[in-house]
Length: 595
Image (cartoon, rainbow, N blue to C red):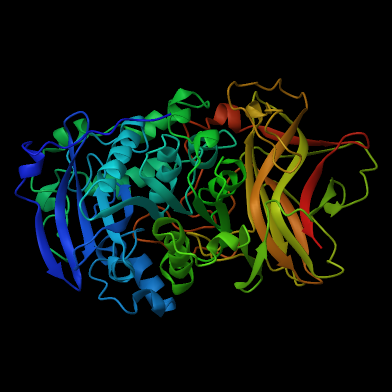
């Protein structure tokens, strides 16, 4: 699948644009607001950071909606302050004047011999147009920007993509179109599948995207003029010089939350915004976050396993979503990767093991370990059965026919193991099988894999967003239980999400539920548990506070909630859910035990 990029003409209006200018500053040659023509006549704008010396340099490019001129410190102050305070290497050796949300700091990359290009996506920041995140038009624009960067006089012709979250996710999407100048990608905590990873967990609508659109996109839409911020670096308005009415702004953007809600199955809307794994052949480094439950880890694992690329690596870390991208640990890892593929350096990267795990221990302790594949070949897949009468997780089979009921939108039930007889590592994807009936025609299941200390205090972690993130989570809407036999594995059920299969009230059905990949070394004497709930997990220890860029408090799932009353009407999802157990019926949790 491919596109043809437009070639700018010497006499076109974009090439003569007066807003673009050059400045020498902080040891860099900076081209501000450079116009890039799109094939339909639209123009998007980029800031280009170059070494002062004339030459041709490999390019690191990002394309996204967050307003390239908005300082990290101004747009996301709570995240910046926390990161800079806890990790002083992030802010060291830089004036931090050019720091922006989830993209590289040019003051650290330009001296390494790279051109850093930041593009405002159509309709956002300084780029006029209609806002439609992740859609086919945006993918075409992204493709054109890559091809534009590949033929500039300051470009070596090799373009790399790098960035966090949005700037990682859209890499998966543009790579399927195979831009000729795209030479390497670093997808840092970037989701991939628009349905499964991002908008409908197990078929249940995530309200994250509607809230994100309000808080992080509409606030930097092109045309808000003086109502927006000014760049710390240039003093210019970060959302362009035009001031549009609220009516005009609304007409220039999609109704994102409503559009997502109107596509409850994995139809062409979702497929257009998802990767085609067989068409992704470019070398890449996929960096996941163990604590990214609800958005960030699944796509990184799926991409590493399923993309056709011959040269691909997986790295997995912890702590906040953005932090390690900027720490010396993360930046040096990225640098070695790009030096090899964009500069052709024989720095040993091609001989690195394909997987680097920061193995997670209680107390936010991480131990680096190299591996060769995912899931790990030596995994001992271990079933623990759910015992309803005792509430235990144990290997022995259930002895009696039993039912266990709970409020379908309630706290649910928990199954907990005896104390671990020895230290036990659990690393990999997980799955659960349960047999369920409902008093209505559907039910939503929220599964939480948990760890408790010897005194039964829950072990949680600083997640990608929430400071009290549980070890792992999974979701499934019972009417979405249909499996894809070609893609399903015992440890990773893969649901088609292409039709609804309503329940007959009171009639049990078998559900195979994917629990997203995780890692935890469970100390001797600790316990593991599986909670089956009817709503999002809530940390029992209280709120984790707020971040400036999210609407809700951090209560355990961060902003990745499933609380849309239109998607979960009480008359369908507010009944009673019953779990069924019998000696001849499998109800279990499948664990990846690492010897």
